[in-house]
Length: 233
Image (cartoon, rainbow, N blue to C red; front, top):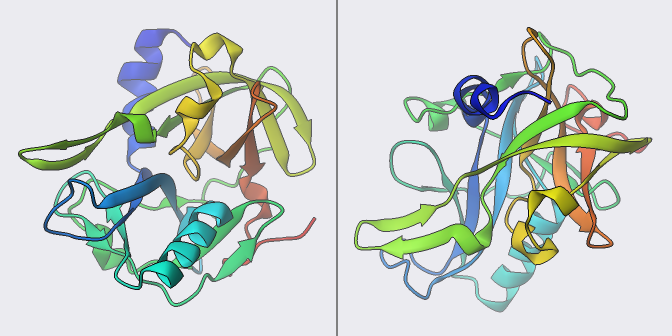
């Protein structure tokens, strides 16, 4: 496992470029009492598409919330600049079983925001194995804060070891992270990166759920096709 300093000063700044918080709100002017939920997202370039990737259950909840209240908006929080209202008509790809949804993203939206698209074609994802270390940054809902300056999301970095791999699914134990299972709410959709000594980071998956209160589940990024659709197997 890399040292804390290696993760904090070398790995985290690289990972931070490719992720952010996604949230639902009733108002862009007043955050207090209007933000109803949040998750996380990753930005990926496949070679033919620039995509925003999050969990299917995040998109599904937004759809249900909007049916109840058409005024609810889905917004993206980037490193710099105001929140962006993200209003896609439908996903490019969606898979409830793998719990991922992909959306085409205008690259102009992330210009000068401190965010960029991870180049999957140039840096193809590797298979992971038990014992590999993956690193990710999530935006747990319990770290969301409304201040006089506006809405803020607490960025929480995690480094975990892979304990099992099953098809497209990757699992790690969360018992050593000193967080209760419910405290992970809000990290859904954040990209995870393989960390190896003296090697560049490589995106390998997206966090989707906590299983049995003990394991954090990721869906491997290899399921993403170049056109943004999601493979079934």
